[in-house]
Image 1 (cartoon, helix red, strand yellow):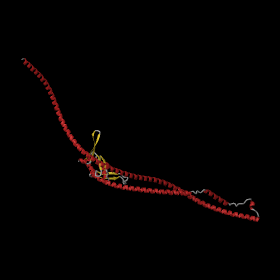
Image 2 (cartoon, one colour):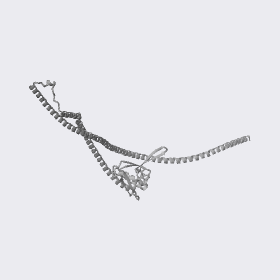
Image 3 (spheres, one colour):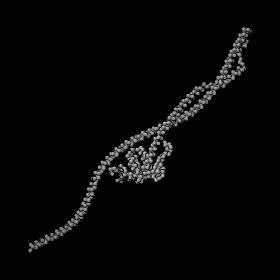
Image 4 (cartoon, one colour):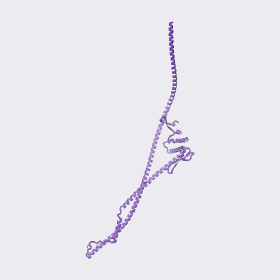
Length: 433
């Protein structure tokens, strides 16, 4: 019994221990259950996250595929753009060469024009200077003529007086000679009488009078001699240099006259040259104006569909005239350009511009929003003519008009994908189409 009791006690203790173990295990199971629930929640949450990650992964894979495709397309586009850029660089280089040639030609023309203008200006200044010199020479010539005439008149008077005085002097000399002859005759007669007295009366007359007796002049002779002496004193000294001075004045007058003739010939030659240049310029301007007027009428009708226009000179002389633009759009009266609407003004101005290009094309033309005032129908006419002219002229157009952009070969725009950073975007429309 003791053995059984001991055994029962042992079993009871084991049961108690087992119960205690079960209680602890129950607690542990409860903890584990709680942990299981937490883990299930975590697993559910992780499964949701996995699904999201898988979705995100699929999205990223799709985006990566698109990026790879875009990269491939971008590489091809890049290669195409590089080739296009190289082509544009080549065209730009060619245009720059043409621009350099045109600039050089412009410089040459401007230089030649400047030289011609300087030559004309120099010749005009020379003409003005020569005219001044001629005026001065004319004045000097007039003064010299007056002096020569005065000297000639004075010389004539002097020559006349000289002839008169010479005649008077000749008469006086003749009278003096006559008096001298008579005096000689009287002296001889006196000497003869003295000799006769000495021979007949043996008397020396000189001893009788104590001195030689001279025959006095008659009163009339003394009076005449006094008058002649007074006339000689009145004549005064004769200016023998008057003839030399007159000769110098004549030489100076001939020299100035020759210079005047040379200047007049130079002025005539210069005026003929200027007249020839003006005639040539006028002829070329008239031809150019006529051609521009005809082409302007044609382009105006093309852009407006109907109507008429004309260029009119404000003056008869084309070298001094301005140009007035008269236009008559369809359904309106013929009127001045300033009375038209904004779009009509723009089309009329473009008609004149394109008319000039048709007569003499340029390598390149830059247009800045010229289509802004145009409506759709006028824009279509504008772009149609623009495409026609683009065969010979390269146009660069700044525009916001979609219809104008549609006819362009290349588009260049500026965007700002990031604040403060501008980016240039280009597109070759021919490749896109």
